[in-house]
Image (cartoon, rainbow, N blue to C red; front, side, top):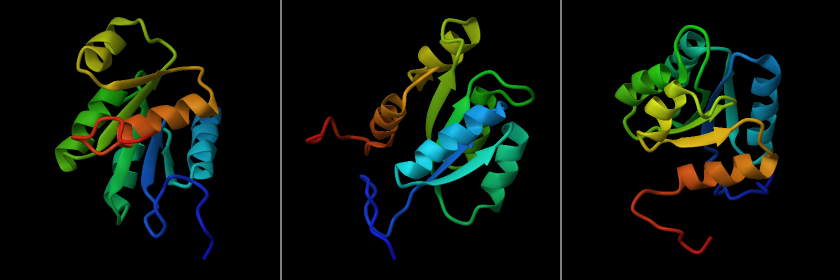
Length: 141
């Protein structure tokens, strides 16, 4: 067994579900998440993500999803998954952060948004912020 070089506690590798219809973005975000020490599941759309979620044995800690995509949009997918797992954390990413959809379904509802393009550091920082246990403020980080 190797030692993790991240903030993930040993013996508990959190699983992150990444959903984006753009293959290059999906692969890149998946690689970044793996580099941070997490397990990455990737899906090319909402329906595929639902299937992966239902087949996955362990709990999924975080959904990282594009807001605008064919079929199930990011917010529609998040609604379905949080109905199944109320404690699921959600991080939206979008190249269209000023559109009506993004404003009304993400920003106005207080969800985390990571505008595309983003750096490895920006993704890692936003993931830490979203995965931070609720009820805690910046606890020594």
